[in-house]
Length: 117
Image (cartoon, rainbow, N blue to C red; front, side):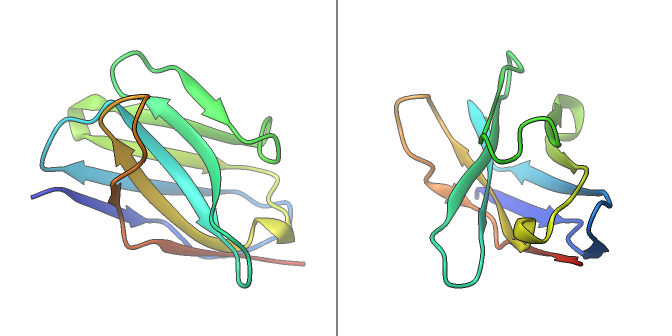
């Protein structure tokens, strides 16, 4: 059974930092991504990482502030978020896919990140 479990969401002040974690289990994935959805907005891509090679990809809005990383031994992916802005407030989701040519069929339940001014 595939499971993606996010943790680490919290209330933080603008300019602060937060680290999200995603624990993956059930099968081997090629890519793990982070997405977010703010109230009244569509879900958007944040960052992704190739599980074995470690190559990363970021949305322009978070480049230079967020860092995605993985720990293969723990089957975990992390999202380090620095210099947080109020517009980063959203529910953050961890998702997984099996190749670069498919969508993300596996999703976690999400974790709330709220950035206050």
